[in-house]
Image (tube, rainbow, N blue to C red):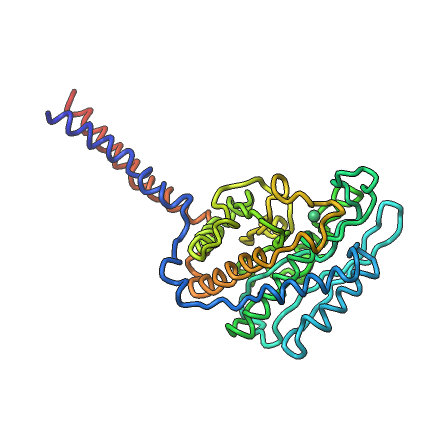
Length: 362
Ligand SMILES: [Zn+2]
């Protein structure tokens, strides 16, 4: 009887670390339980929709085009309220396949009252649209440009409208909006993510001051489905869990599908590679958004309900995270170290019990 008791004890001690490890991995921090009711969302889907109209009126915003230059001026003049924002333009250039040199510009938009010593989070989007609609069902249109009402303009609109409500309604100023040029020209001459890669390798990238980043890409489509993008879910899981949990509590679970999805090459990736937690909010363009990289990616694809679901969910997430920043950082490496330290205690203890048993028996 005594031997059997010892055996059970041994098994129990040996599996103890697994018990303590499992809940830490995967679930993240659920801090949102009582917090949603204390915040009111102000994100206005009609304003976001109008910001998409403001961009597509110029036509496809191909890098180096007059339309993309007009878009920059529009954002500067209209979307950005005088005196409240300042814009930094990061100019660079890249040769297109035919040898022509293309001028590129990343836009960094910050509240003017920002404290330069304070850390900040990022709202990210790309504002270029794709030069060739190479996924169009009609091969005759493969060299036509993409309007990018959803793939481009919707991300910009959500980021700008969120910026407005954070600053003017919630008095939050520790963030920057970065709009990237040349995200969407991959596999037709350039690589993907030209603008964001240029940014993270420049001196404007202040790694030590950035707490985390949220990227908006194709966030306005009718009946959009946002699943937990693979890279985000692996490297920024607590933030991902917070967003999808809050979406569920706010009755947006028909848009935010709480399951892991493919790893997508998008503008959050250069940030993750540099160690900044970054989440990509992106419609499942493989199975759901059929107008992806086609000539049909126009205003008719856009739904105010989707814009509202994304905007208000992220607004409440940002307010929640703002109150609990310490709980979100550092990210996965910390939970791993916790489990290692558990093993450091448990393994010698198991060895001692083994040795004692061995001596008793011999
Ligand atoms: Zn695209």
